[in-house]
Length: 162
Image (cartoon, rainbow, N blue to C red; front, top):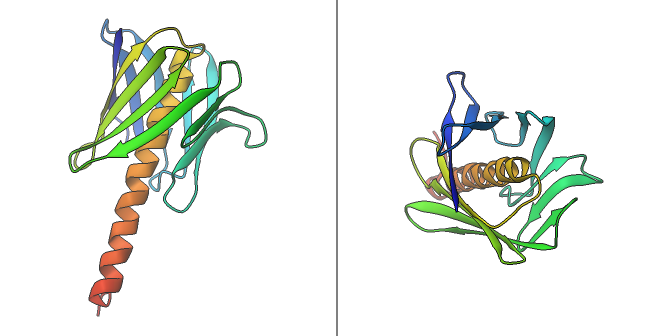
């Protein structure tokens, strides 16, 4: 099993993915609304997008032929086996699980507060770092979508600002 951590970088909206050994695996840059982003590493740079009202789905690369598409409960990997993608939320954290052929990636992101993520990877995954960054982006986008939906609900319930 391999453990990785995503932490904020020095510039706003940027994050660094690091293995427990200290090796940097990639960078994630996102816009404030978590609708668009970009991941980069020694393999190059790939655009990211989140879609849907609550940002429940995300993809990396071209929308018509993505490298990775995560749309619960299905994950489509351009160079990998059919996979399953699931995001769960409780009061304290979001947990994303990607599984295929006995391999699993489990990612946790706090539901509130500072943005960070941890990932546990078991088994072999082609393009592991790109897959991880896409999945983490999907979870951060979902978290942002949930925050926005809650804000809208509160504004409607209270009559908005007066």
